[in-house]
Image (cartoon, rainbow, N blue to C red):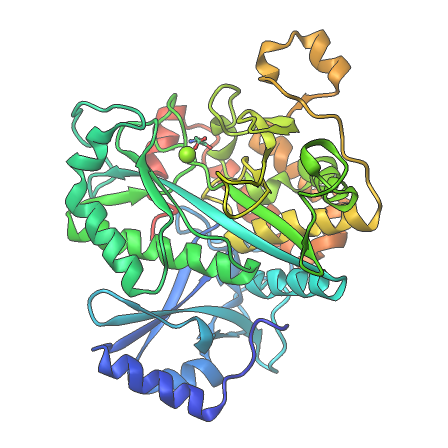
Length: 454
Ligand code: GLU
Ligand code: MG
C-alpha cells in the first residue's frame, strides 16, 4: 500500500510542533465504511505518534454499521476481533476550533492492511495504474442541502436556481466555509447555489485519487463544522426531500501516460486517444455491475430519475448532463484539461470505494483494449424507446434491490475490488432495504436526511 508510508520520527515531531503552534489540542482520524458513514476516533495532540504508529482500536463491525445505527453482521464480520485505525501524518490538516483532522486507514492487529479498508483499496488501484504507466487525477464536486439542526426544511425564502440570491442569503456561512477550507489547505474552486432550494455545490481541484478522496472527507467535515456554527446542518443524502432534485457527488477523472493526456490530442472524437477511449469504454461496460458502490443506498435510486441531471442513461457524450459519463473537452475554457465526469455517484457512496471502482474499470478497459462506444450527443430522454434501443442506450437500474443484487453476483466487481468489500457493501445495503421496506418515500427521505452528514 503506497499511500501510507510510515512517517519518520522527525516528521511526526515536526507535525506535532506545528499543530501545537496552531493551537490544536485534539486530533480526529476518520475512516469511511461500507454504508458511506464517516467514523472516527480522536486523541489529545500529545498522542499523535501513537495514533500514527500503533493506532486506535476499532471493532470489525465498524465496516458494517448501518445508517440507522444498527449492524449488518456477515459470516466473517462479527463481534469478535479488533482492528487498528492509524492516521496518515501526511494528510494532517487544521480544523477550526483547536482541532486537527487526518485520514486514517484500517489495519489488522498484525500490521497488514484490512481487506475492507477502502482507503487501502483505492491506494492499491492507484498503484496498479502507476505500475501500468498511467497517472490519474480525480476532481470532486460536493452538493448538499442546508437544513435545520433537526433535519427539517428551512423556511421557504425565495430561491433562484443557480441564483445570486442564495449566495447573498448565506454569504456569512459561505465566507466562513471558504476561510475554513483555506485554513485547512484545501482550495475551493468555486461555489454556487444549486437547483434545489437551499442546495449548494462546490468543487475541489483535481488531485491524485487517494488525496482527492481524503479531501472530500475533510471538506464534508468542514461543512459540518461551519453549518453547526450557523445553527444549521448540511444534508449529504442522495435525496434529502422526496420528489425533488437530489445531491450528486460527481467525480471528474483524467488520465496521463508519460505526461501525455489520454483524453485529448488523439485521433478519436473530440481528440480522445485510443487508450482514453478504452478507459471510457471500460467504465461504461462495467458501470451497471459496480453501480452498487456508486448509488447503492436505499435513497440512491430515486435520485436517478431521467431529467434530474444525475446521468441516469448509460452512455457518454460531450457535455451531456443526462449521460452517466459526461465528457469535458480541454482548451482555453477548461484549464484542467479534458476529463470525464462520472455523474451517477451520490454522497451516500463511500468516496474511496467509488473512485476505486471507477478507476479499476478504466484500467480494465485499457488493458482489454476496449473500443470507445458511439457518442450520444443529445438528451437520451428525448429519443423514443425504439431510437434508444437502436442507439444501445440503457437506463441504469433505479431499484436498490436490483442494484445490489447485480453487485452481489458480479464476478467483475469481485475480481477487481475483492470479495470482502463486495460482501460488506451488499450486507449493509440489504440491511437498509429491510429496515425501510414499509416506509413511504417522504418518510424514508426524512428519516435518513442527515445519515451521511458529518
Ligand atoms: N443535483 C444533480 C445530481 O443529483 C446534479 C446537478 C448538476 O448537474 O450539477 O446529480
Ligand atoms: Mg451540481
